[in-house]
Length: 93
Length: 315
Image (cartoon, rainbow over all chains, first blue to last red; front, side, top):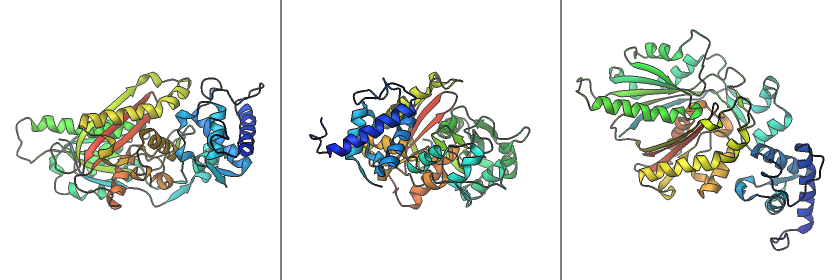
């Protein structure tokens, strides 16, 4: 589903995605770029602890609060899935 | 049928903010922020002047149902997260037994299922008592067991668990009978997963991935055994590992968050094996349980492998 189809602000989702890929590359100490279609667990080896650290940094950098309590972590397969969730389930912090 | 006759809990008045533990425990700013923002851990109880013996005695002091029935207590089970609870030769369990007039009881520690040892102790106590009741009567009245839980957060390992939880001090005392009428245990299910054991942390990522599905599986298995579904459950009494784990469990189980007793996580932290008992008291005090209501207690013990456990009761 595209950001538009999900009724999201495409510009904000892109901002979330850009922040996430930058933070992920740093957290995971990757020299190669992190892209939207990469799978969080299988490809990037992201644990749930690192996942929370990622969300915390995204919150700090974008000054938002993410509604983690409604997140179905099992449905967050790719970096793009997570960016779409964050863009649709956050508010100014 | 195993039943909880009475439950008493002691949680220290002194609360320590998570931030103040950062220095002594070597936590980074990020770890502290994670604990507070997502794990919902704001402070933990500490009773610096109390020994493990003192903590257990303070819990037992509130167990009015024990008074005058000491002679009926055949077993005292100390359910513990940590295999070692104090420096040798200190043995708080036997000291407590002597102080409570329970020197005649068979006293032993239940451990090696970490924070799931509390539920195991309830099941063991019920089985031991039921076996005794099947034998000739001693004319002393129905036998009872006393379950104790609660530990000192006295080492780094007993204060914080990876990026998952912070332990708080406190204690619980619970009187168990084999065939009592109140808070009857309807089912118990557990899954002991030695395959998660590792000295190097090599299995930690897999444990994180399988944690919630494994806990959901034992919860459903306990419900199946009781002939119930989650729709029949009034409240869930969780282990207080952290908030986000239970928020995600609720999404996974499609169970309303407001029916999981999460009140104590923010102010007490993870009180070892005493969580279930503390949350039971909170549920009663908040009027969440009416006679006949079914509720489910769930716990995960991690460390040296992992144990997932769930127990269904009727109030």
